[in-house]
Length: 526
Image (cartoon, rainbow, N blue to C red; front, side):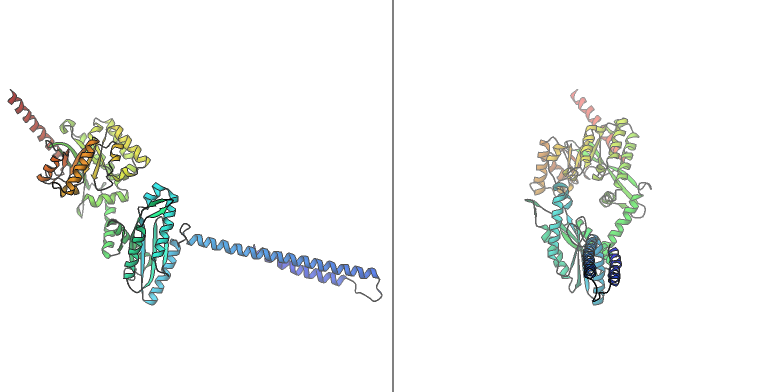
């Protein structure tokens, strides 16, 4: 547009000048003897030329003003586009793109001045819960307030940016003392922990922070971000609501996790997984009533990998879906290979991940296979975590209903370590609750764990829910659990995880013992 205006003005000005010159040349020169009419004509021509020139000048002025306004609008649009490309629209903080440029420039300055630089990567713990429960409008307000709090903790001259979602970054250049990073990290953790007041309601989140330092950890901005992210992950694993500095140990752990996850993806195909079954006994007579199917991984070079190491990796990577399907196949294979009468009604418990409930097609396929077979659905129990029931999605709720409708039992695993709200136990028709082994480990008469276990058992019995105590390893624990009327026990005291054939042997011996005992009673009566 500016080019067009310039072109028009460039043509109009010479045209006006030429027209004025030609008109003046065409007009007759005034003579002393000229008649009055000739003078009048000359005056009219001159006036017309003047008027035309004024009009042209006004047009040029208007064109010029239009040109100036167009230039300003174009500059405003360029500025707006630049800001949209470089700043977060919600918090008005620099975004990832601008942060990268600022970080590179800050690193160059620190290299020249031979000073350190600190990078803090901040993630808001619990923000997703606020966003899901209170809505995105409240979530946006909370992010804006959190941005202001984080900015207030950083010194002037620092860069505070928003990466996206609920992640923020603070770049602190030209450090003279690492202690400054400790102070700012602690200050951010403290200020984020305070309640957020939005629309007359209180909302709580915490901050987990990972910190990396130039040049101690790396001289590359990209690597500093990666190392800060690893430190952030360590802060979350350590319990959240804290800051952690990057260490070389973290890097080794991350590489090990990545390598292990990669190997886990091929573990099913390579035949590295197998199932074991741990008996669950009725406490009143120590009769084997249930058995929990447990997965084991024998790595070809690392040996046995504990489930509490590889199961979280499987859930994070999504491999748990494939592993869950493999478990279903293996359990059905074990049960199909025998006469079910040999199990004497023993119920099989399967651990089901929340990820599997989010993608329930394999759960439903397993139920349909059971319904087509001669294996009753009542012979199975799905063990789920408390967190699954806290704010279940529509898909999860529908899946839980389908599971119960099919006749499969439901058990809450590790009860007492999570949310422990008994209300949802009745709502979702939970059949069993497993008291976590951390409460059984130090169980003594009248100590805190005793009171807690007794309370859980009493309240669960009011809801017609059976209790299973995990991790029972000695006779004292067993006797105390009898006193407080626990229903079932599981642990090394009476039964370690074993192969399916060994489980069948235990059931067979138990049945034979019961028959002998029954015959002896009959003989005594006669």
